[in-house]
Length: 51
Image (cartoon, rainbow, N blue to C red; front, side, top):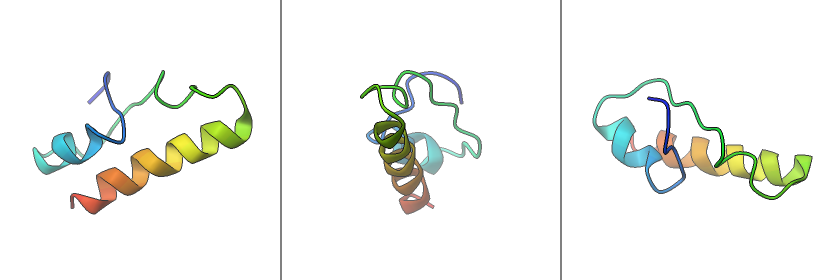
């Protein structure tokens, strides 16, 4: 799924059967590489938790 993927929506779309999540703006909030890494980790953990 592409679009609207956030830590809040990742579990929902994963539970609905999505196995590839594309996150853009949710990743790049924060403006620093450390913030990007935290955002990616949060989305990944949320999606993995729904499996």
